[in-house]
Length: 261
Ligand SMILES: NC(=O)c1ccc[n+]([C@@H]2O[C@H](COP(=O)([O-])OP(=O)(O)OC[C@H]3O[C@@H](n4cnc5c(N)ncnc54)[C@H](OP(=O)(O)O)[C@@H]3O)[C@@H](O)[C@H]2O)c1
Image 1 (spheres, rainbow, N blue to C red):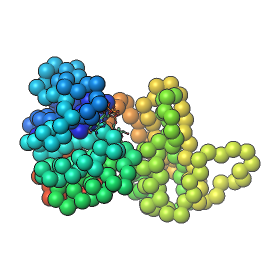
Image 2 (image 1 turned 60 degrees about the vertical axis):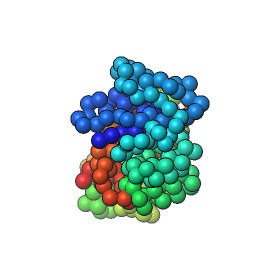
Image 3 (image 1 turned 90 degrees about the vertical axis):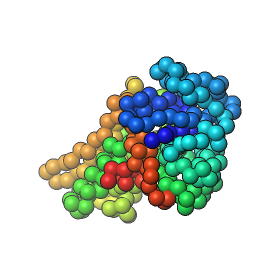
Image 4 (image 1 turned 180 degrees about the horizontal axis):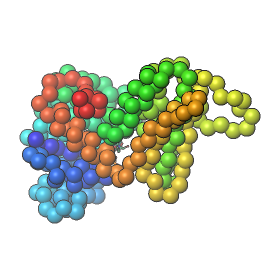
């Protein structure tokens, strides 16, 4: 598989570059970045600490995509629409991990999916996907009578809450219990817990990369379903699995759940 990276010199681009070295039959053929990138014109392998790879970071998106089967995008929301248009024109599958996409980017990905396969996900972790599926499964099996609460734990520098992963887990709960009321913290005389509450709590401190636990609290027992990130490669790993899955697929929209089969 021939792979191009969009946002190649960013944290995710370099993490994918490093992990890609361990994927058999995968070659990085293009490394697109912004024209303002101070790391422009640099060898991608050297930026990733791997030694020379012979692929240079370039602001020329069309030529960076040349010859690729799949492009993995971790760039910035405003750059996604033009990537989607060009990749579609060149017949290249798209894995898009960039967060906070605007309406133009979403429309462009939809349009591209008419001619090439497109997988877009705000959370590329395979483990988080399985956790979300496990939560849905457990709630369906248990039925009512189990209260659900979510606790997410992150490093002290994280500036937003709840995390995107917690939001993904809320989505999973709402699939089974569409009427739950999300409650972000409790303080003071809040009264006894009602059946439709879904507590979501953020804990911050130290250098924790990201832990998420979904509690299913019943009478006489509780389940604790937990995902712990041990390093930031989890998203790069998922994106590479997604790219391998997408290569050669018919046009259309795909999700991380499809990658897991
Ligand atoms: N889906 C997931 O699982 C997941 C996981 C992690 C991160 N993300 C998201 O992925 C995105 C990138 O994350 P990151 O941590 O890698 O950020 P980052 O380190 O800031 O990297 C982004 C890269 O994209 C480049 N870029 C900016 N504009 C561009 C353009 N027009 N064309 C091509 N490249 C451009 C940036 O260059 P400059 O330095 O010149 O701006 C930078 O090198 C963010 O939206 C982040 O939230 C998603």
